[in-house]
View 1: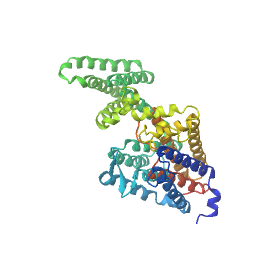
View 2 (view 1 turned 135 degrees about the horizontal axis):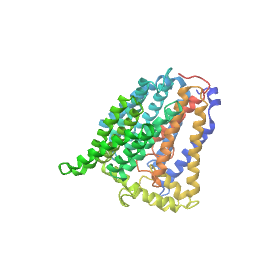
View 3 (view 1 turned 90 degrees about the vertical axis):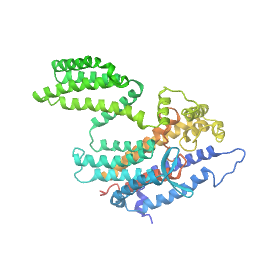
Length: 472
């Protein structure tokens, strides 16, 4: 039985938002499956019927979560994390491959995606580690521990060839900043993202040259002009000597190699002078320089050698380098047509032509948002965005009310995961993000995702019922 005190302390605003999102999602799944020639209200073989059953089971999950003591989620977080990583690793060998990713267990008619459990377990484990007495991001041991916990699921998911799900785990770093993590790392992450995009657009030698110019300006500001001038002279001399052996090197990589060698020569001089004159400011600058160079070259390698052909094609289509309206760009083009055709108020419920005639693949899962756009128009899509923004804002407000660090961090983890799914999924449907198979929380068809998001949310709501307690 759920205690009266628990029922009294439940945040019913969040519960109502959840129910509205699930209900509106189901209505649109029904629309995506609707056949005007056979308008059956309930067909157990259809996706909308299965989603309704899964929602019924979600209510049972909610009941279980509320009758469970809040301290259970702390005590068993490591166990749940270990189990989730084990399942993520096992599915690589025992799972069923769907859409190129081997990330599903199939037991008869039931499919289960362990990444949904991993999101919950990793959020709980990260929250527990940060809430431990004496934890500090400044301690190397604590930092390495949380990075290991954070990255282990990512590695397993990448081995499943499910890049989209792996990216979700990176947003779990956002709550770190609320708990005292250095903002410089976030700045570096933004710079890294920009460099990654530029690496796709421009040749590597231009990116490397730009980085060197920026570092030279920083050194000029932080040290003196003489040091920069001599180091640049050494670099330019190395470049000129390298031109003499131009014919002996594989020309495809010549400029990258030459710039790296010239930078190495200049860096060596700067390092020697820095050590001799005890100018410690050059150490982090040189670390940043070589980190940027390695990151630039490794990004290019990752895109060309690690990503599959269809993933590279989708990135190129997104950035406008390639036009493939009947291949990689088909889903997005049809989705944009559906959303644009809805106008201000939409064509009307069950009246969407793109929806009824199945022009948009995966319309009840990854592209459910375009069903909203076509049948409910700009008003409907704006309402969906508003509901999600209110939900995420509500989660942040509740997180800030927690007396327990564990509950607060977990609340921010939940809000971060929801934000990533919300932003990327809607971005996919309107052509602002690559198509990476990210479902829209509570909207997209799928039992695993519905149960996973429900569990994420209602564990936090259970913790919130004890917001005045220090949960350890």
